[in-house]
Image (cartoon, rainbow, N blue to C red; front, side, top):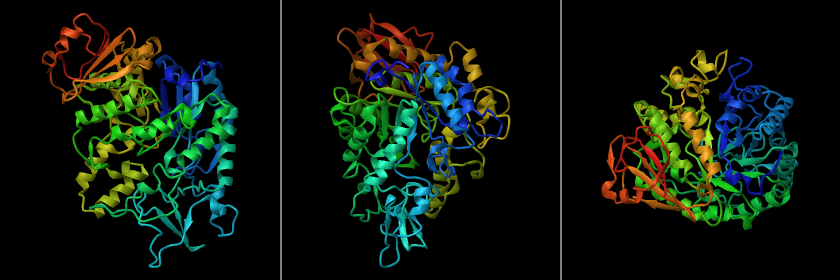
Length: 559
């Protein structure tokens, strides 16, 4: 497979597949590798260059594959290694690249390393994980809370110590201070890269270096546990570990690396993604996902403040313009559907989905599309808690009840922010279960599949799918989208997200109306600027005025 340039990923568009929910080929209700192969031409037609595959490794599925039991084996319900080899071959034949998930902050407690580690304090694998004595009062070593609720420490009766798990109890954290562990991880990475994969998305990679003091965190008002973030987010040896990953493994291959990095600022990212740092190509920031919640608690809802969102994008776009690189996303397997979140998933579903796509794809960086985003899939409102599957969501429900939240308030938060919004099966057509499976799906299909599905999108030339196709092609055709400078305009407007992309010989102006109101831009002083500009893309086929933006309208002008 040809490699265009060393920085081929700067011109690429990535499509994320969540295998469990993508396409089931054998009727067992769970998506699989052969199901992905069946749909590759759909993705090739869309125009994406890279597929990021969420974990397909052997796993007990406590956290849908982010709890890995064996890094070198395929989860049997997804298929075999022969199926994987076929997938990689089929993708490369279509000139598409494959990025795998790298989950090395933690494993499953069923991984052989941990099975050995917990047998005794003297076992050679004991230091592959983080074990500590409890406090004298028989409390855990620290007051840290797990990201999935409850304590971040689990007591082991056999060896009378606690192990750290920042996520589920069955996801013990690995001890990156141990050089033998790191060496084993690097061997595993080479195993996949030597097969011919094209990169790694690194799960919570900025959590791997822990502060060795293991001190208690500050307990905020209304919280049960201390804030542990200062002790593991962007920890003391993180840059050393990332440089070592690059030196030992990544530098020997021409591949994409993107680090999932909650709590990373633009200043952090400038170091992580600076080519001279030799760490990562790009990071996933979380800051822009926190403007519709209170104090970073995603379940504590508030209305989106568009001015705050714009300022945040401006900060990231300008900080990483000269040094480093941005990733661009609205959706992934951990985020609710953007058209339900920042758009209007009823009357203006199609228009607001196109508007949100325009807003993101005209920026500088590598765009990521999450499965179903390209057809405008929406959040789901299941009737009962029993219909949900996500461990984070189910644990949160119990914890918020303890804090005095009502069932109704918690369910409202789940409808808005629950991860299962992104994990309902892909809607392929209007047949039973949306064409995802001939059996019983592992999680219910969103009832809107009869209206919202890929077949309907492919049959409609004005669909969201074809709009994404055009945006992807624009990125390939227009270098200014990759290289142009970003300048925010209409900074204080509460409804319009507007910005310029400035190149040497051309300027693009993107205007996006985030409201269901007609907004007059004549008073904003840009109409004169647009008088002789040409429209390169818009979601309003009947656009007849440059002085107003209709509800959820998006338009990109070229000067």
